[in-house]
View 1 (spheres, rainbow, N blue to C red):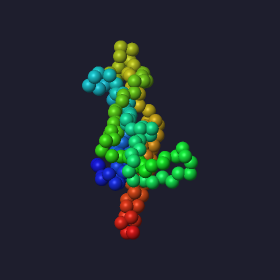
View 2: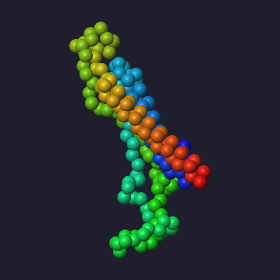
View 3: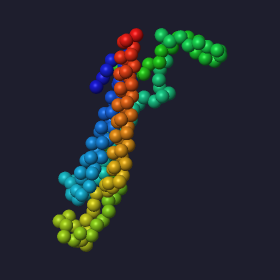
View 4: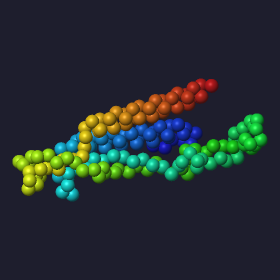
Length: 163
């Protein structure tokens, strides 16, 4: 969801909420498949997690001469008008990628299981419920934080219109 250029706070918060939602979806998928010993590939389920990246680093923020007059008390400070450009259409989108955890699962002795090897052991998925619940709590807290920031931006915009 893209909101106008004058509302960068809305855009940043909505991107953050979208990423946290994707993280919660992956955690739910991991927990749902924690007993899946055979997938379409023939191996046990591998835990998935989300990696988010952006090409926009803080040192890449551009300063353009246009609107904001900075007061200089030191000759080393900016002497001209500058406009900090962030969140415009030229910014690359935040890219998210699902990555599979390559660590081995545990071998469990279950000779009656249909996926057991010749020694009676079954390779279980590498999903740990405790880790997944910690990730779920972190993602939900991140979502709540972005929602709070979004609501603060909304309140600021409403208060600005009342002036």
